[in-house]
Length: 95
Image (cartoon, rainbow, N blue to C red):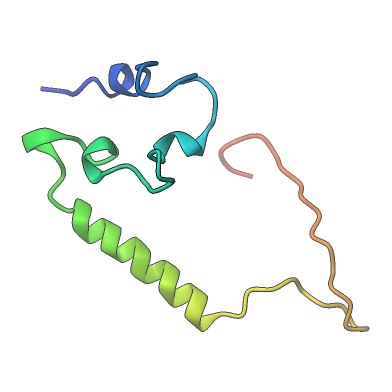
């Protein structure tokens, strides 16, 4: 048995413009994230992945650990000025 994730996520009545990248589509009218029952990454119904709550907690614990442990800022050069990051992207899976 397999779920029809594509048919569910391409439903224009629930997700307008399904081919467009729009993270705001996962927010409700109050600006909060949709309920867990509407997120299909771990499956749905009785066949939903049992580890979804552990995975969610692990992601939050990792984010909190990084934010409390590291000082996230731009690098500084020898004179103390912040260096700009050059964004360079390459196509492909491995470089």
